[in-house]
Amino acid sequence: MKLAPLSVPYRALQKAGRLAITLVVLGSVGTGVGFGGALVVAGVAGAIALALVYEFAYYRRYEYTFTEDTFDIESGVLNRREREIPYGRVQNVDISRNVVQRLLGLSAIDIETAGGGSTEAAIRYVTADAATTIQDEIRRRKRGDDQQRRTAAEAADDTEGAAASGDSDETDNAATREFDEPDEELLFEISPSELALAGVLSFDPRVPGLLFALFTGSIPFVSPVVPEPAAVATTGLDPTLVLFVMGAVLLVGLVVLSWVVGAVSAVVNYWGFRLTRSETELRYERGLLQRYSGTIPFEKIQTVTISDNPLKRRAGYATLAVETAGYAPGQANERGSEAAVPIAGQDRIERLAEEIDGCEDGSFDRPPKRIRRRYLARYLITLAGVTGLLYAGSVVVDAAAGLPWYLPLAGIILAPIAAHYKWLHRGYRLEADHFVTRNGVWNRETKRVPYHRLQTVIDSRTLFQRRWRVATVIADTAGSLSLLGNDAAAVDIEIDDAVALRSELRDRLQASLADRRRQRAGGSAATRSAATPADDETAGDDGTTAADETTVDNETTAAADESSVANAEPAADDDHRNES
Image (cartoon, rainbow, N blue to C red):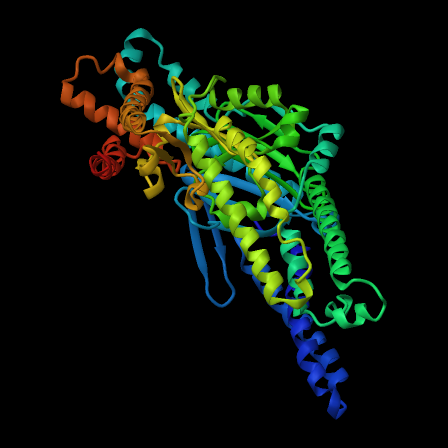
């Protein structure tokens, strides 16, 4: 099978456009000798011609094929490349279409595999119908491959019994069912009011940084906007007052602009958002200018996060995000959260989260009350530091001599309230199958981690935590956000509670892994009852390995997980002994 014919001119114009920009810059240097314009025109025409020739050759040499066990791709003009992607290793098949691609009927496909740090295969471009066919066909064959692996040993053991009882057709029926398309259940579809609310409550933090770069004089045409103090003095106005008013106006404008950009971005990104589920995976669709669709197997989900801020909490809304293994943080930023409900009622979000991971809501164990004094001290130190910097600036910089450097001290009144709410919104709890944590005031996150997803349990104590006799227990997973230090954590809990929690998480991890192995081996347990204990153990391990071949999972072996947890325990014990 081939790429879409329209991909040739589309890809050629993409490449020619980038090359043309370079030629325009280089050609402008030659304008002084009289042939710069002609050079630019000739260069752009040549770039388009070369791009068309190359892309046509690329189109002729690119083929993809569905085989019995793998999805094969042959590509390359100068260097030929052949790839065979086993269906069992495929994690996600994502489809994206921007506005131009939708007008041309083109789609881009990204195929992610287990353990890959980047996209395994990027198909640029096929028709919209072909993209849907590829996505559905890989999903269907992946399910069949997984089902075959799970039932192979059981079918072999059941052959003798099936022949005796006349039930030999059962295996054939199972083989037929393995390729059946599962029914999809609609979990969430964003309404116009929810989309508008998501925009209203959005804020883009990147805008302040960009505007700061503009107004620091790094771009010459912006610098004249800021008046010189001497010029202001000639008008009879107080230069300090003028600068203060300009600063206030700039701050208000910055907030408004950030809100507008965030609102537009949220509406564009989550336009038409739908989240559905089948027996084995989640499927999402979203986007206005760039349309995304993809799937996430339940076996790949590492953490479910419910987040909110003061405005959302006041209105009774929250956001739901699903963290997976295999995506690098940069990729997540490019496509957004792969299965994130941008905004919905708090109760609705709780129900959705429970449908995805089966974890029920409950109360939290908070840090000791004395820790509020620690938070208060940190806020007061921060306010003192900011006030000191402003005072130093008013002394050193003449234009800032009259600025009210003491204004941050007004925060002393609010510091105790902030310390109390920071303590109030922290906590953890142990559920039957999940470790749940909550942290944050301005951006409160409730993380729910299944015990079998734990990679490492870390007991961390800083110098100041040891002084306050508290510790932090971090539950590390294989999720991409873990690389950024955004793990589930029970922060500032009693030292004895931290030691007990670390041990309890280790025990529950092993119990959860053992329970999952028993469940996966349950279908063949009856036929293996006559086997020796050693044979039973081997069969169970084999079943686990076969199931785990299709996902980036921390259950590769129970021993590896037990070792990773144990590696963190000695360091924590040594720290605990030092604390004593």
